[in-house]
Image 1 (cartoon, helix red, strand yellow):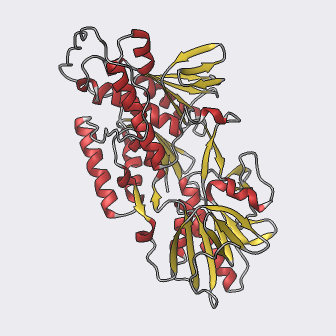
Image 2 (cartoon, rainbow, N blue to C red; image 1 turned 45 degrees about the vertical axis):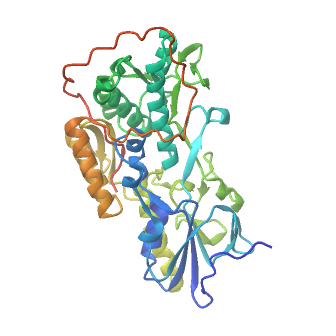
Image 3 (tube, one colour; image 1 turned 60 degrees about the horizontal axis):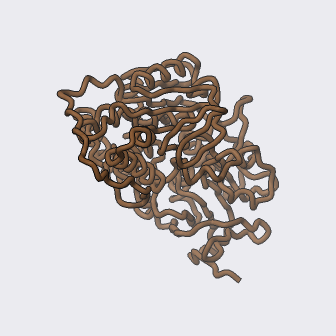
Length: 458
């Protein structure tokens, strides 16, 4: 018998258990803080993460603390407790959430556990092509990129050096586009003066997309603009390129072989495995096919939202993006209140305010209210303003603004830290005389693009 966790006295009050403190779960918890319920938030991390800016941690613009905040400091309401635990399964018959250290009983359960990486039936690719979902992922990618440059600086064989200086990003969605643009900008405008034996401006950055164009969720016009901006930054964009193999020395696209020591994954996502324990119908991505009220069919005491919910609205699936999750979280809180009042639940209606995808320094594409197309510096400014507004906490907003201002004005990347979470076998030092150092550039040319991130309007 597992111990009962989260033993708050809720015998006389309705107990709501929320699994996941991402965008959706956090909104639900906040909206329930004044409701006549007891709330327990369960998460395996102690912080809320602003995922749209993860790629800026991965590319040395921001520090992890700039885009995260402790869950306990956010949810200080009297009716809320936070439990650091990993949810393993749901026992719907006994109405308990089974965690790694015990069980949490619930009256109403809210599942907002988010998504993880999907390698399309190739799990062996995961250790050589990391994805970007957590702070640990971002730090590992940052170190992988920086250590590749350190290895290239030590390498004396031209072919092996070229492998270290080739960066392949798989997937032409927002994550892949953000990473490719930011890495290319960093290599060409932030780092050339820092190395002597290599010229980082000549490094290759390849973006591979299996579909005919990048950013397929945007109109073709904006997709074409994004591709042009990426190519201005020096990114080699390859569409219609299905990856057939990934290993420690490169990527295979059909019969073509691309030698590369750094491969990053931005292609597929899959729903958290926790929802499988509900034993209800799932879609191809492993998401629960929820009712319009966001409840699980046959289980009105369980709500599912965000990346683990599959809902078709007006003939289109509700997208798995932050604004949709936030709207779902607020709606679930309303429906819980309605149920406590004995009133019927209301169906969820997603309001698409638009989304933005960032390509580089000062350049982005966006679609507002599904009608207004935007691109260039104006789209980037709107993206930046929206993200600063929705960051949790004044300290994070100030830190991000200052870091962006510094990066924009100086092109510097001061968060280039290697702390040891990833350590490849660096090539040995040459026994021969060191080759002549590359000349320092007199002055970096004006940047054609920027380095911010791709994300939606909230």
